[in-house]
Length: 119
Image (cartoon, rainbow, N blue to C red; front, side, top):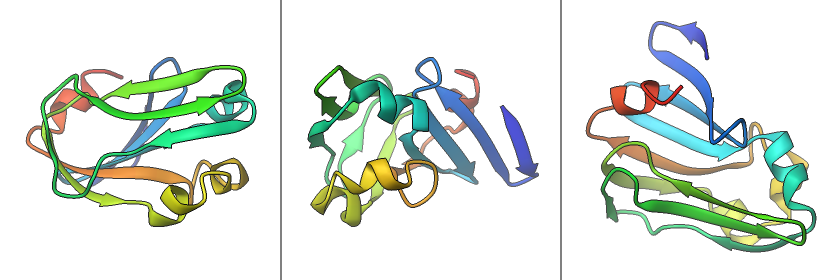
């Protein structure tokens, strides 16, 4: 885990396959470059809908590839505030820039500390 400034916390989860940036109560999740490479050729992407309410440890997203699949369980309870429509419409774009423009989901967390506790 590293800290960019007092209001922004950056870390990795799921054995380095998923990155998270926490700003206030909003957490942005995406796959790391190594997570994308582990998948092989992308075959499927299952994202939640904006406005959906999630409990801690619910399945937040699933990314399927020719070599493996990644299912990510949300480490906090909250509401889906935004989905990356570019990636939802063109999942192959995830391979181009997984660490920046390749974010998947933003969640308004009830308790962001739950995520930090997972680092």
